Length: 125
Image (tube, rainbow, N blue to C red; front, side, top):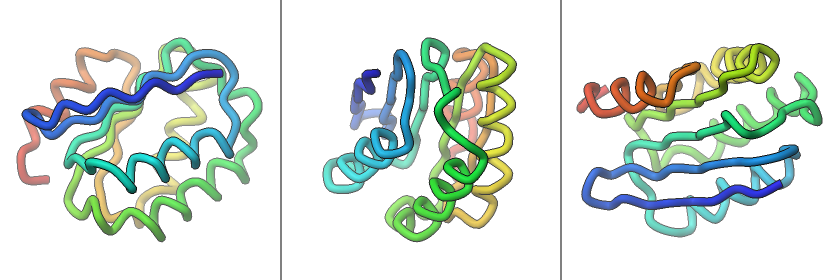
């Protein structure tokens, strides 16, 4: 599994592109490193080439609580999650519901273009 991070400071957008099997610890490590670096208002998780089969609903809930606890630095930001497969999309929808107390908004999409459109057209969400 690999998570590549790209930061576009001009557009205030960080993109995480994941491939292969994802595990909770790897996701937490990527988020922690992000919070310790250049934090942007917009975040895009491209999970179209990733598998979430190793994550349980408890893992997703734990990740949402982690974001709620550590995400204050992104107050008012937007996070788009993208998955094309049904199982991954369903898991992300569940994660979006668990993240309702996070200090930023979360949107779940099947299309990378729709996710980018949502991020770029919500300037003050």
